Amino acid sequence: MIKNIAFGTFLLVSNFIFAQNMAMSGAEAKAFVTKVSSETKEIKSLQADFTQTKKMDFLDKSIITYGKMSLKTPNMLAWKYTKPYQYSIVFKNNKIFINDQGKKSSVDAKSKTFEKINKLIVGSSNGQMFNDPEFSVSYFKNAYFNIAKFTPKSAQLLKYIKQIELSFPKDQSTVSQVNMTEASGDTTNIVFKNTKINAPISASEFSL
View 1 (tube, rainbow, N blue to C red):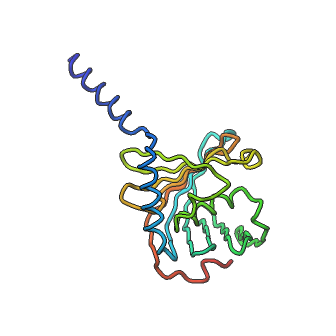
View 2: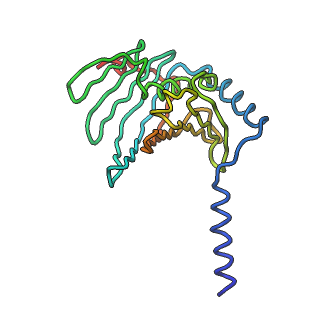
View 3: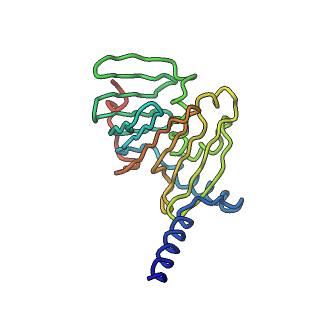
């Protein structure tokens, strides 16, 4: 009985260690960046369903929303939330266009924090994210993912964003998960599925 308990404890500890992120070596990081940059440069469009989970200190429960993300190079990105409410946000020509359940508006995107996430996601479709001068990048790996962690360089941006983490499945060069930690400690997790690359996207996806 004691041996069984000891063995079970060993397995739990081993699995815990196995799942931990480990820093990539310089050679591994270089190979990862080269692979992603090479394999994504032919991407012209990308669509995926997403689940977004937002955790905020003042709320007991996480806020979970569902929708579709559409990307078209060089700089068009749309998020369309469908559950539990309908809300669309489109990044185009350095502007944010919003449709909040029929109420439409637009604002300049250049100083918006969320625009930084979108810039990285657009960059992830062509490998340019690794060269973003606003962030320092560190690289990690675990059993399932290669991970790039982006930390803002400027004190101004650090007031809002502590870190943005992009996860790439071992057998893919496109992002399957985004984790953002805000300066306040609030977190946003976005998981993509049903990803389609270079499939036709209607122009209506980027209009409100």
